[in-house]
Length: 405
View (cartoon, helix red, strand yellow):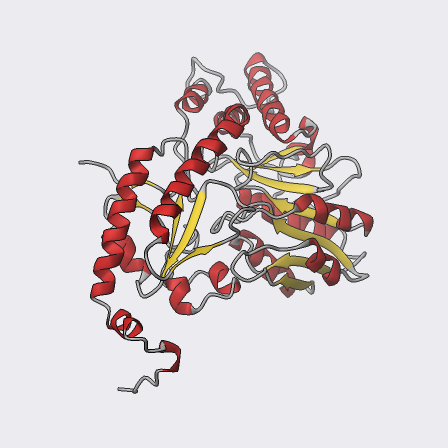
């Protein structure tokens, strides 16, 4: 069976063969299978050595101190640990947190949880269509009791890049902690934590050709950030995250981060050509809109709304392409994407959007093929749509009074 063309790299990526190779060396009796916390014999020491080497690999990509890297089970756990950890530790200093309406659910649902604990959250509105969250918005939302700002570096649905450097200047000047979700940014944009005034940063391995089930949280040592642990037990990871370290997954994440650093610039350049080719090829269809910022973005995403076409039916028509209509975490619901709604799109436009996301195995032939099938599918579905006929006849659909049956 011929597999569909994979264009959903924002949901997950395949593990790089070199990464898988490294991981397999840590599983069987012949390999480094010991518990990294076993201090009394060589099996443990060797495993610990691999874990610490991987910690350095992750730290090197983001220009941090390896001692600032805390292993977690993924970016969702990192987000939870950062937000709850800071909020609960510093609750006596203030109970106000700033985030935005287009964050990942791991941030928004954690904020809802904190609201039930008595914290007050300000949800910033992004700029319409582009989804930008500006430093001015953050500045305007700061109050005397603000203790934390949490914003993502690259949006997982539209690929818009936030100016975290400028926002970090503001938070640091106001002595407010700044957490950044960088799950979709690592390996796509340069991250330099030696200059960025960011206090906490979340990472995931499986968005960057590493395994699922492993992530990390950067916790700055100077100026020092304290956290209240959320996972209690043997006091691993300097007490911030207990639990036996999964050597094979950690090694996989380290290797993936090292490889990503080597290919970052070349891969962004290559993908930019493919993204532009797809967007340019779709633009001459009528009523097609780009969601996200036209220039302040990463090359890995293209989110497009095809007016008068139902996104779900378009996805079904693109049988030989694996794409999505929003983030994988929420695409099980038929609600329109909350990210696109926050950008000011109508329900209809939000429902008619497709997210194409590209990666290391995407070729120009893939783009040519997807372009031709997408164009054909949009034309076909519009032919079937009475709304499209009405639009073509010049009827303004927003003024139509629909009869109740």
